[in-house]
Length: 156
Image 1 (cartoon, helix red, strand yellow):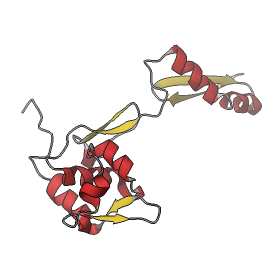
Image 2 (image 1 turned 30 degrees about the vertical axis):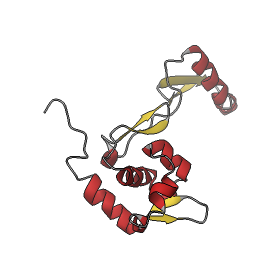
Image 3 (image 1 turned 90 degrees about the horizontal axis):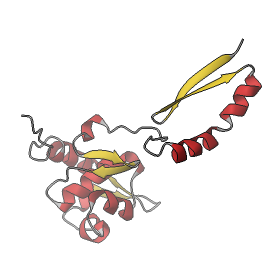
Image 4 (image 1 turned 180 degrees about the vertical axis):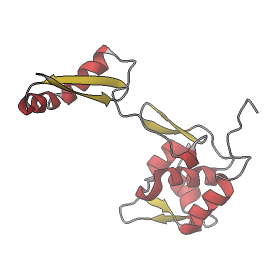
């Protein structure tokens, strides 16, 4: 009597039938090849795991082609850089990564090393930047909770 297992590869549901554990192991060993075939055969279907935006970042960010995209930018470069770093969380980000999310060109010179904003950022030994406690407080108290910064719903 055959058994089967079902799981998702992105938005595609895949079912594998097997009679023995060895058959299942062999089929699971071909998942990358299956993803490649699905991508070629069904380009409109995503074979990558769907990513979700943290609840506190809804309205500010979305995913497009697997990349984080700022869809509602705050009104100043400093706020955009702070919000981008907040989205990267504790992992931090390089100036290049910050620029790609915040659309602030050369954030290292214009914001990260600017004496007015320096208290919000800290550079790690690996060259990435993270928010300081002051930076986290600034984002949570002045950007995420500010009604002017939040995306307005067109139906209200």
